[in-house]
Amino acid sequence: MRKTLLTLCLLFLMFMTVTAQIYTEPTYVDHYKSSEKSSPSFEITPLIGFQLGGKIKFIQGRLDINDDMMYGGAISMPLDEYGDVEFAYTRMDSRANFRSTSDLRSGSFNLSVDYFQLGYLRYTQKGNLRPYGLISAGATLFNSKSDNVDDTMTFSMTLGGGIKYYISDNLGIRLQGRLLLPMYFDGAGLMIGFNGSGSYSSVGVSSSQFLVQGDFSFGLVYRFGN
Image (cartoon, rainbow, N blue to C red):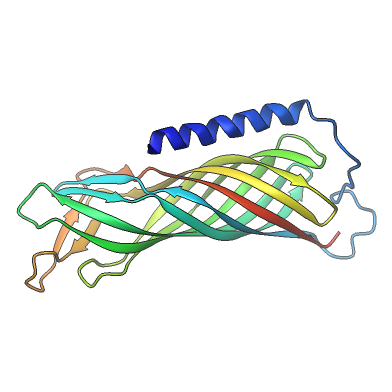
């Protein structure tokens, strides 16, 4: 199911990108070459969508995170006609299942997955319809809602792409898909306590690896300034 959904999302983005290449542009106001720049322009985009939870193998078992709705937002500023710098925050509230392959007990718990990312958007063309690719790096917080599991913060990267379509000079819509890659370094892991004794045990990875996740989102783009 996860692979099918991710494949459909990627096919949709490819279709939209191809469509953009043959689209006839409406009247476009170039905000990057305005001769009267009274203030720098920036965009705020609330986002909502769906995220794939993913799974990761530890030495002592496997952690599966359920797919669920995600939400968040992004603030971006133009660097030039074809590039923006952007800070994005997204969150998914979900449930995780630890399946033990050792003497530890299996268990499940609620958690949130929070992404804090600083990235770069590269547009393929100017106009009201703007396909783009993106890359970002930052941190991901796995925030456990259970007393049996400690919170974990780890380095992460994202790769993705999407399309912005501007309905007017100050309002647009945004469709986006991302590959999310939190990284667990050699020896890192989780502290869990499903044994009921009140003590915790560490579960770790034997080698550095990514927890592969993905998301697909929709947002309204609000543009401010010239």
